[in-house]
Image 1 (cartoon, rainbow, N blue to C red):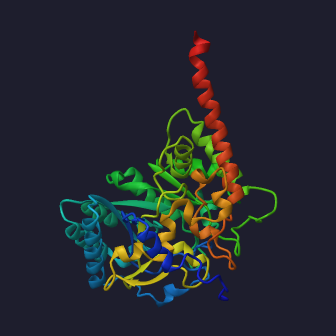
Image 2: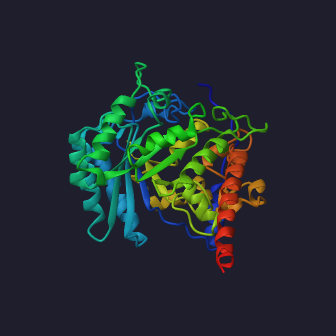
Length: 410
């Protein structure tokens, strides 16, 4: 794939970080760590941002994280938590497909991470998998180590298999559904953290959501496909009329919010409602909260968010490594620091927007343009605005009815 020409640099220069620290800015410590247990995958999903983007550096990574790299990473995490007095943190075992690392490696990783963190830290371990290899043996192992599990599922067989196929072209829905029933309906249901569903505009949103509900997930994360101004997401034509992703999610919102009982959590919509009501979101997909997660590659390199691979080759690299650099050093990397500055790290257009506090500029990777780097609104700007407006209107109507109810009753 052709390498893109891009703005140099696409974030504030290092001198800006030093100047802000001199003026009193203090980085917010990481509380989540994404460990790349395996750098390859056993599916070939059509929309994958890891293997089908402008950055093919995954080919240079070791397939698995070596034991000594894992040990050093665990030490660095413990060092960071201790330095900042953090008593609760999370580690996600990720990939590629982390189950490809094997049971022994995953079990050892859990033991090493907990031992390094020590008894004074409540360490939440999670595993993000495509579900294809999730057997009873894996569930037993995760239960033994207290590892919660999230699974990727895009809807029913037709919806899921449209994109989530193996290299041989075979769909994966049947295998994932069988694994999910083992997880959701078996003795280890307490491990079930939730489902991740990447939006495909070709799938009916309500039918998709209701299929996900058949597994009784505690939470659902609907993910916007990764894209930016140079490489727009499928079905989106930036600058032209239409908000297809807001329309899709709006239908999910009405079905979810209008249910007489709470069927599951939908974190994107919950965060949007929380922000509209003046609260703090749980995730960093919306709002102005500082980025608080770090990525460690299989070779021990400290990286930014994987999704930056969709911008250009090398966008996620920092030049830092667990062997010689602390997580505090990563906090001061210009690309990470800019995502801790709230509105100051956004474009002028975003800073002047009335939806700033709720939208927060959208996902960082979705802001990219070759000429201006990440100093832009999200490519989903119009869709986010439309969805926020729809959710706000529904909330405002319900709040008004609640306020007028006593008077009507009297």
